[in-house]
Length: 102
Image 1 (cartoon, helix red, strand yellow):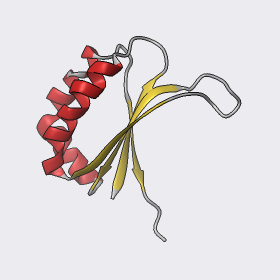
Image 2 (cartoon, rainbow, N blue to C red; image 1 turned 90 degrees about the vertical axis):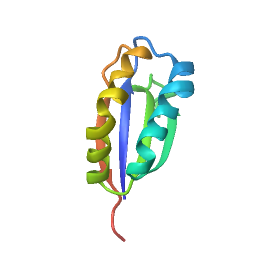
Image 3 (cartoon, one colour; image 1 turned 180 degrees about the vertical axis):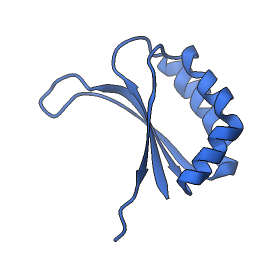
């Protein structure tokens, strides 16, 4: 299992209603058959010292494997990633994370 973090930097425009009402349902619909197990959304609140959060929103996507994510992105990436400008003017940062053994 891997966790793919899609992180949207703070600042700029972000339409949360569109993101939750259209984009994330689209992600789940297109990618579930490719091995997407879970898609959670978290909203950045602050840093531990009370400063501004560096990311305003993060999607946390749990996959069977990095290969499964790559196949899903190849199949539906243009549609999914092409939808991003409809809710934000920020460039998403994507990171693939592994769960430690043990």
